Image 1 (cartoon, protein in one colour):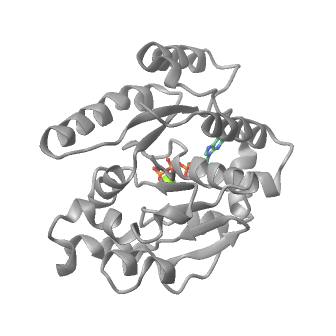
Image 2: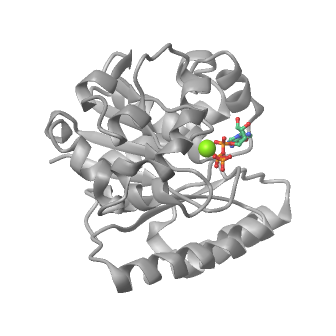
Length: 251
Ligand SMILES: Nc1ncnc2c1ncn2[C@@H]1O[C@H](COP(=O)(O)OP(=O)(O)OP(=O)(O)O)[C@@H](O)[C@H]1O
Ligand SMILES: [Mg+2]
């Protein structure tokens, strides 16, 4: 069974893209056939992994290319559908008006079974790309940075999910909360980690520590496992990979 996972949070800069890329490569390195889809016109995945794709998510969504034509083999076992700023034009494209929240699901359906994991990196605001990701995914992973605005913003995303669930048939659920930017020296890190655990209990993963190597790896267009395999970032994301593999994704 393919596990379909969206990394989502409407707050910016909480580690969604870093988690998507690190998790994607970690799963691929362990032999799982993985597809990473960049659903954000900011194209952080392309900026972090490098590549020169001729077709991207825009072409897939507006029906100008098949999923196969948009997939790039980025690393062994790690395929990617990239995005770029053109993706924004999808919102107003005439082909993307009917059942617009289900387009990604429909367009990816021919290739889903080839993969053990499909990960979606989502943009930081509720829009058509987030809606499509929430519809396609079964599991929602929520990277939350351990600060006041990010932790208090979690309520917004829960409200938004309830709102969508009320109107449309939705099978995705929050399967994992990933605390990010953890610092053992900062009291607020412990405090906000406690708040998340109170609310989400066992769904809270071990925190990802603040680690400048994660940004440096992206600058080199390498994953943390390639650029700094002995860093805290690599250690923490390796643990997250194990947790994801060992959890079956059920409700
Ligand atoms: N644990 C961490 N420690 C230090 N820096 C980090 C960590 N995680 C991510 N970063 C850096 O913080 C910035 C934001 O991270 P990232 O792009 O993953 O967040 P995002 O949630 O995808 O942001 P956006 O909402 O803009 O899509 C990046 O420069 C990234 O390299
Ligand atoms: Mg991002």
